Length: 416
Image (cartoon, rainbow, N blue to C red; front, side, top):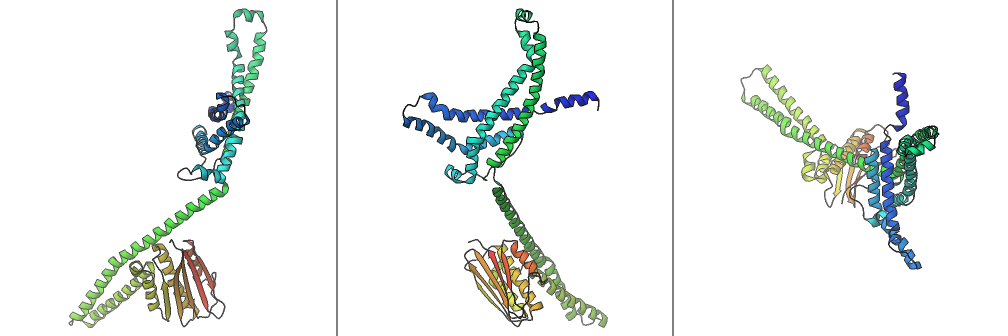
């Protein structure tokens, strides 16, 4: 880069994109002039004399400005978006709230502080910066103005050229000051607006939590839907093919008496393998999403689990209405995994499963008379259950003293 180019960039740097901040400040001044006009309108139309008239002339415009607060907020945010490209989110989502709700909200109080205090002060500062721009531009172009005056005046003032050089230099320096002040004031206004016009940190966190909760619920529903699709595909596709193959092998074994002993043994082994594959596939399908859960609900699905358990399991289900499919699936798999843990680790002689609904909470309790000692961090699969329950904003607790009994309690949110 040549020295001339470097010098030109240094000279032009303060004015680089200076038009955006200047236009931004000018728009802010216009908005505040509109507010000032509303406040001064009664005094322009008539001169209040009595105390009541003075109070009315003050109260009515002030009330109008307060009630127009949401509109002023949108106008100011539009100014930031259009002039600076800065997007400050609204403190609320969707439609604008009623003015009464807006006034009672913390966001409404913050926005009024901007419109009635910070905004006018910033607009006053912006007006001063704009005046500096005007004065600097006039001073920097003083020779243009001097050429416009009559020749006689210039003849009577022979030192005007030197005087004009000083004024021009001062004007150029003032242009740099005005450019810096415009950028600094624009940044200050942006920070102030982000704090007073936008959502607070607590509101941003709450909104983020809502978004994450909705996103997580969508992922859970999508995963449950995908499991159902896989279950249907396996049940209607691979499982049916295996059943057909097992039937054909059985028919071949029964209707082909003239087979050699080696061929018969091969057919019998293939037939046995097919039946074992069908059994394994049945267990896999039940683990993905049992059809009985979708067709008949938790009571029938949990009764099926109890019937397949190698120990007596008592199942009690009291549900006035079915919960959502996602909550049903979580409850089913929690009970399924809990009973599996009981069989593997508890050395229990019996177990009990209770499912009840209390308002908007689905309560699932699984207990056994085993040796106890189960812990969430004990590596028995309880951590996986806790994560699955937490995926739908549920809670899982385990009470399992050494020597038993063990009681696992699960609370799942359930829409009314």
